[in-house]
Structures are given as structure tokens and as C-alpha cells.
Length: 337
Image 1 (cartoon, rainbow, N blue to C red):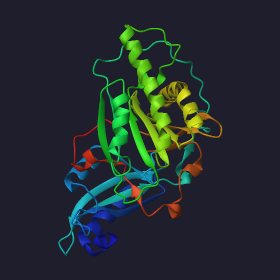
Image 2 (cartoon, helix red, strand yellow):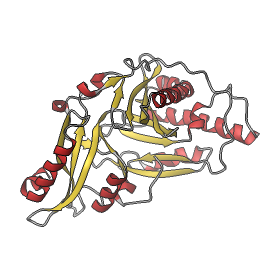
Image 3 (cartoon, rainbow, N blue to C red):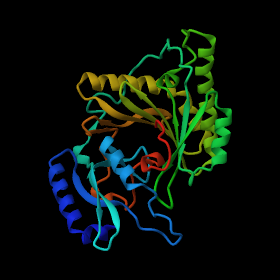
Image 4 (cartoon, rainbow, N blue to C red):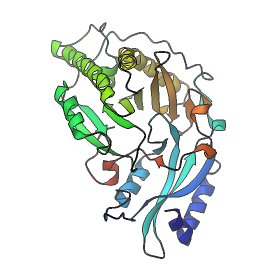
């Protein structure tokens, strides 16, 4: 698709002007590339399943992160700008200007004193809403519907399904996203205050269901479970990787404490006038503990567990993911994740 940009003078001029506007920002490298075209495969289907106008609308409304190998724990940068063009041969395509993080632009949680946050367990939780839902998001090309059917059948709350799109023929992981209210993540057996027994049962039921989900990862191919929520204006995710049942159950047991620590990190960053838009925790299978992997601030600056989390530009893979949902591409209703 890069030839489309090379052949279209208007697209080249637009990309050069956009790169110039963003070059003095926080990114180590700013480049342009084609992220969509109307090229079709031998079967007549679009190589990239997307409505270009819907894609551009989403990019105007919110920042779109770049991920390495479609992995929510491997941030690369952001889409900074995008526009649609037509080549001299009549092909339609979308050009994006991409900002890549580099190690020189990364702060660490250690430097900010946030790598070892102490937060007491929660003892009170609000009564859950009667409209409480669980959202499960997967790419149906990676995770079969039958597997999701089994999870949904055991869920203690109604389940909403969202389709992801990695826009790749082959992916390195089976990514499963589970969306919940944040209060369900900090629930622990020591919580005593509930308005009703039904509320208590709802929280306990979600906790038990999540343990079943974690156990079922053994059936997937190199799975990545991303348990996601929102807290105080920040999107929060907790990543569990792999098929080791003992390690994954340990991650589940430590999730409530990790979530309370995440809330403390979000509050601390906000108090320092560094509000976070996204915070990701990962479970260390060797140390058997949760740790903050990275945070993206409202101004797109990044904080990471270590600068080596961020790849140098020369190390970037050929295929990057925009982390899109099919709803972003005009193919189905939007979910919440």
C-alpha cells in the first residue's frame, strides 16, 4: 500500500505538512503510512475490512494507539492525523501520520516513585446497578464463538459481545477482553458493607466467574486476557498471559489488590497534574505479583515499568495494530471497551 502514497502528490504534500506540525512533539519519530485502501484479495473481499469514513470519524473523536503484534501490553505510539485520498489510478486509501515512542522519551514508574504503591484493601462497595453488564471482546477469527458461548452461559450477569479486528491474517496471540465495572475488580472477601444480599452476591459471582475464565485460558493459543474497566476518567487494564493454570489463578487472587493499587496510582498522577488516560498492569508469572506496565497520560506522554518496554524505531515490526473494534470500522454497533 505504500506505493499509493508515493504515486499521489496530494497525499505526499498532506503527509509532509502533518509531519512538520507534529515533529516537535513528544514522539521520537513521526512518519506517514497507508492504513487502509480499497484493494481486494482474490476472493473479492477488502484486504482491510473497514469503512474509511467511519475510521476517519473515530480517529477524529479519540486517540488511536499503535500496538506491537496487536498486544495491549506493548505500546508503540499513536495515530496523530489521518486523511483520505484517491490515487491517479482511481484507488481510494487513507494515509495516517504516526508518532512512535522511543526510549529517550519515556519516564519510568520508579523515577516517579510509583512502582511499589501501597493501598489498603477496600472494605465498602456501592450497591451494583440493576443494569450491570459484562462485556467480552474478541476477534472471531482468533477465538471461536463456541468458546465465548461457554463463558457467557456461566456468567452471573448479562453479557454483551464486541468484535475486535486485528486486520491481520495471522496473529501471535488469542486476545480476550473482559469489561467490568471497577468496583467488581476491587471486591474481596473482607468487604462487609452492602445494601442488599443481592448486591453482595453479584460481586462475589463476578469474582468466581472471572476465576473460571482464567482457568479456561489453558484451552487457548498463547492467550492474553485483558480485564478492563474505567476509574476516575482513566481506562484501566489488567493483563494475564499464557496457559499456566497455577500462575493464572495466582493472578486472579491478586487482582483485587492490584486494582486498589491502580486506583492509588491514578489518584497520585492526577494530584501531580499528570492525569492518566490509560493504565495497564501485568502479572509477572515468575515473581507471582502484579506490577504497573505502562500509563499513557492525557497529553500522550508515556510512563513505563522500564524504558526497554518501548521499542526503538529500528526494531518496530512490519505489521502494527491500531487496536480497532469492528464498530470503529462501521461494521457493527459500538461496545464499551
